[in-house]
Length: 594
Image (tube, rainbow, N blue to C red; front, side):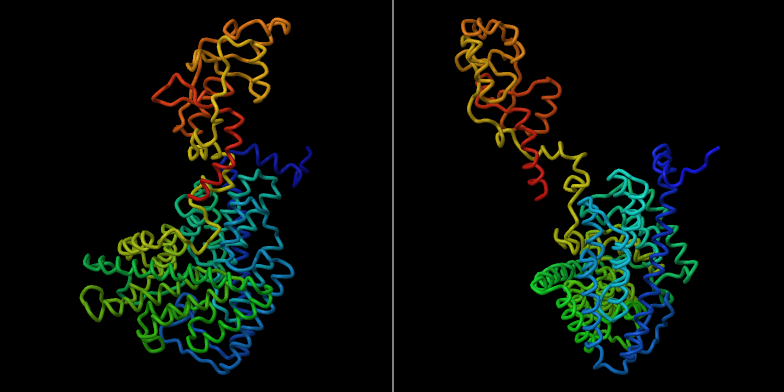
């Protein structure tokens, strides 16, 4: 028995397997790749941090409780003057590597993965390697960035590469890409359920990639397990006693107000980041990254929480530690985080925006929580609860991913007790944040995604009316005209049939096939009425082309006379099957603007 089938016959085995078995097996493989990638990123960030920020600058970075930090962690920096020099050099090196070897890894990695999904682009294995290297250098080198961007692109590249190995269809490959993206995020943030959901939610502002949920769930659990077995399963953040509990219904009003504030702040982030990115496009990538890195270091001298991921400082806001982070500094730190992350990522340095968003939302929520506590101490005795909810509301408003954000922050804090007020805040923030998103590659729904073009192109025709594309002249042949005249008219317009009119009234149709039954020498004398069909179909100017497409299919005709509903017997134009398909590009363009 010949058992030598690997890897030659693997695609055939894949095709013969049921959906659940296929994606169950594939989810495990993708999860292993994403989990190992997450571990590599975590250790690489730690290595560069020890070499550059801790070693050269002497910066003792606070850590969140789940990563070894404690509420009273002491902040220290030995050589502050070196900070902007180191961050500038980190930007220069990282920018050069990105410019020279992998330009697609510049900026926010999650956005690059979203773009690759929608555009059916290939993510090469070397993309994952350079994203890991440049992001670890960026984050470990003290620039203001997050781990979600690189691991999203690394996980997506892992899934896509496996899809290429198994010779998937483009649709299957995109599902694998989405599962890998979610698994990477689940692994690096120890949030398996949120990772699976974000892998289905992040591509759209108002839709879901439902097919990615099953492989995403499996891959996320596997990736999370690999990281948890290595560095522990504890949540990223720890909560003080009595926190993360919802007890007073009156607090819902204040959580809704917090959501509104986060929406305003998210609008500022999106607008400011876009302006910074546009400004830096005038420079070569390596120079822009260097300038952005140095500028981030200068801000770090004034507001140390912008250095690195900043999770330790967010832990202070949750734990209500005012020794190193007094309430008056929280609002300043929130704005500084937006400015620093925009300078880091907008200049082309590699990384992600989720981490800075968590810190921004936590700082803003903490400041708001202290204000509420001072004014109404009985409403919410734990100001740190507002910090947790602020994390959720801010990122959901900026990224248009409310469901996965709710679950992710809950998993990162272990604070499921705040889901009810968090839902109040997240809905408010999402409703008031507008349509602009921090991920420009997102589209509104599957209908606008080129990845689903084959499924939804006909539906896109709903946005084009008959009046937009019809031949406005009433192209028809008179009932008493000769068959030769009808043949010539059909030839002039490339038609296989024509409406027939008696005066200005529709009375039938004539087909090119019917004319071929009449000898050519007799066509000049024979009238159209001898061979016409006493039936016809019409279209109305206000009807959409999807409705007309179905009518074409049902009647098996190549064109329809266009008539006004007030005068249904009088043609005012003609719509053809070929004209309908020619209008499809127009329809796709219009729907992309919705």
